[in-house]
Image 1: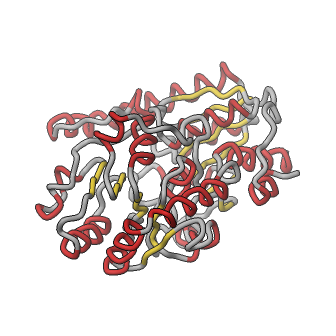
Image 2: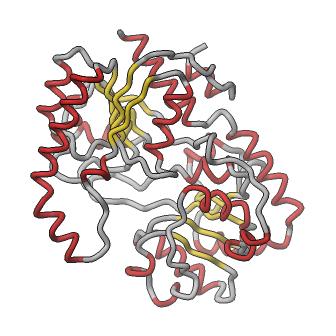
Length: 364
């Protein structure tokens, strides 16, 4: 059975199915990052996966002064990072290099690694390939295949650069982290709200939430995530918690909320449209949370509206759906349960990584 068939049937790939396959994995390694979830899935599949954490070379700074210094140092750090990747490739002798986004890998580095007989793959999580620095558009054509998470991505990118091969592979959830837990009294006190939204700030999300706050000014809402304190409007300041939930706290906040919002990011430069699904689309149901998701064609292919997910299309409809489901907890709970059953284990990162490995085996 192929990984695609496993995803369709909900079957979990066997542990050790790819025993001994060596993977050099490039991506951020903080707990809760999608990149780390993918590398851990590779290990559960039996791979010998060696991580190179990009944040070791490119840390995230908070103050404007530190960020300015980081920009000045970045070209030198990029050279050092690429040299380190080359050295580990020689020592580790991987079968596969898998980059999660791969902002800082240079095309000449990838060409040198290919000469060593290593297959090159990229798992690309974002809507645009042209908003993450100058190196990425030059390196993407060097990969044997780019596995992209947005259905429109390949068409957008192919208008500007040549990709050797592309394959649609959506986000997922991490079965070792994103699971149902029993919220403690402390969790309920810290995270328990009628409505919870956990995401990085964008202007599109801000617009939807501002309209919602105007329509329902007394809403019991918490907004968690980076950027809201600095860029969020005054109308939302009373809802912003000023804390970026990561890892286990993210899981427990989902469990403690009555309704979890899944608002997309909106359109960015270099993309023909905004995203239709994100990792939240899978993480919220995997944690057993009730999900109120922006309605679009892609999410309706994943879940049945009204049975496994609730949906909205405008701020006005969002306000109405919140009113309804807060008043009907007896409908909320079965939808959350059915959404969890649909998601787990079919939409796990174990299945996503198995699909990449299956693709690799079929072509080598």
